[in-house]
Amino acid sequence: MAQTPTHLLSPADQERRRALRVMKGVALGALVFMAVLFAIAFAFQQDIPAFAYVRAAAEGGMVGALADWFAVTALFRHPLGIPIPHTAIIPSRKDEIGRTLGEFVETEFLRGDVVRTKLESTAIARRLGEWLAEPEHAERVAAEASVMASSVLQALSDDDVQDVIEDLAREHLIAPEWGPPLGEWLGRIVESGAHHGTVDMALDTISAWLEANQAAFTGLVSRRLPSWVPSVAQRLVDDTVYNEAVKFVAAVRRDPEHQARRAIDGYLSRLADNLQHDPATIGRFEDAKHTVFDSPRVRELAAEAWNTAKSGLLRSLADADSGLRRRAAEALAEVGQRLTTDAALQSRVDAWVTGAAVFLVDRYRHDIASIITDTVERWDPAETTEKIELMVGRDLQYIRLNGTVVGALAGLAIFSIAHAVLG
Image (cartoon, rainbow, N blue to C red; front, side, top):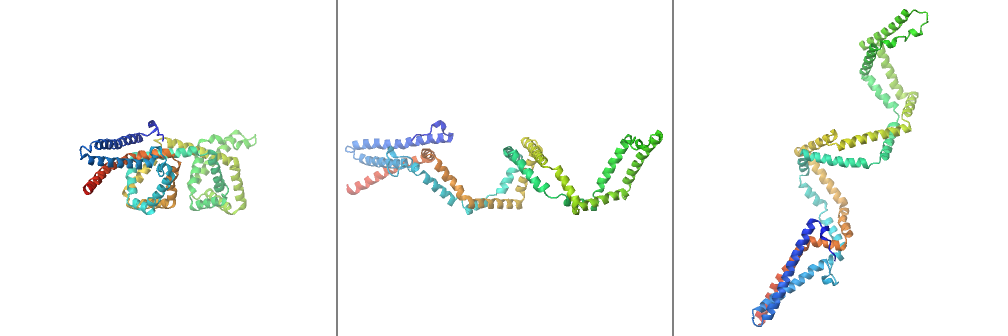
């Protein structure tokens, strides 16, 4: 079985491979030592009777070492390349091992009661709050969230988003009648007198314009007079019109009960009522709405709205000093402070997290465990064998070493008992 080249392994796996080779050398050295000891003892046991005990110990040590070498090797490959039944267990039963491991994880670890017990003993909210309360941590979360949000925005199709905005605008803004709700809203404003401030502002604007644009009244009326009227009379007429306009606006500004104000109130009241109940007024308003928001215009507005929002969000998300990023980090830090100090909030968050985790585990534990099974099934048998051997092979070499020692002790004990009993 070909091994993965060392330079393709991770540093941790390279260290595991080195340690495995060292332990294989130690176990093999123990076997060779027992073989040499056996040869020496066997050759001299007739001359030195005590060497019979050494021979028995070495013989038992070799048997134990060979038996455990066979057992350990049979897990990963065929000993000496001979396809002996029930050897090369891991590569030949890789898929079954993966299924068994997946079932074990599913039945023993991914259980609602196990997850609940573990989470209930962990102060999730408090630990999260302590972590988020640190400004650098809050900024880090905000930065990572910004990267994710930017990726999502850039991945979205502009045409698809514009279609959605256009459909939403048509369904919720353009298709419904505007007249009745607008009339009801206007009626409330007139009834409460909230429009008086707007009227005052309009009067102030008109007054300021009149003061700054007296020349605009020159010829306004006089040009319509007969040509025989003297120019002095013409200027008098224009000045009179201008002065009367100024006086009228000033009078309306001073008098909250001015007739013009009442006329405006009456007009707005009638308009509010007509927008709610007069089909002709409602129809004209809807016609005007559809004229303004014709089909191409809606598409253009959707494109402008999306492009403006997208570009603004991308700039804010990319700028670490933007108001959006700063407020997000501040909000996260504030949430962390609350999670640290608010016991009621901690309890709610812990209960929510625990409940969500238990629900997900109970509902999807088979799917989660199937990741193990599917992953093992996709592995190459040789690669799987090598991975497992690198993880546990070094410890398994101790079995060979222990087998050598135990075999030697057993051989010595058996020979000693037999010699004592049988002579």
